[in-house]
Image 1 (cartoon, rainbow, N blue to C red):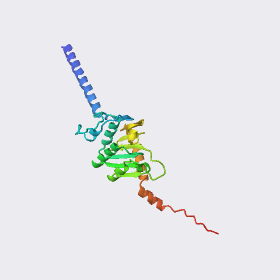
Image 2: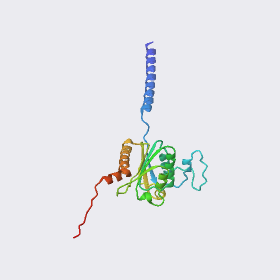
Image 3: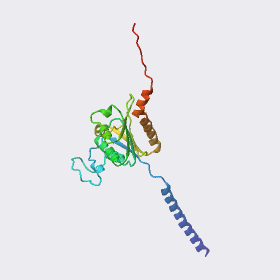
Image 4: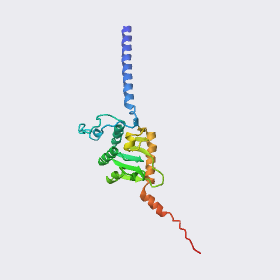
Length: 225
């Protein structure tokens, strides 16, 4: 009798232990934060059609001769940019790539708040898309100082950082050896957000002109003999 009782107790204990382990694993899975996105892209990117990214409901709508349905570094970059749901802060030296411009315009038309900081000299070159963005009503500021605004980064929704050597130009995407880091690491995203906010304030042209007007002019008067 005592042997049977002992067997039952041991069996119940084993079942209880098994259930406890399963419950613990379930709790760990529920409480563990989601995996943080970290991705590296290298360029030049393979040439492929990206129309399906802009029109996912019409995958067969494009008849261009480029390969279709291929995932490339450029298509990955476009997807990350188009993932913005509330804001896109872009700080870029040269911006002439029409597909990247199209992505920014799509976000703008969808109600995403866009802010663009760029270099005043490169904003005026032939092929620059900065004028297109301005005509669409997107807020663009150029550097007001004498230094190049040479940054190349974007922050999506204040949570996703896109940065690296890549200028937003066709040559950089298709011909240059470039790199991009995409990350959701808060310790990396935060300094770039702070830098963008600082530069956005510093390059407010209205404030700059007002500040310049407040400075006393240095006037030299010559008196001839």
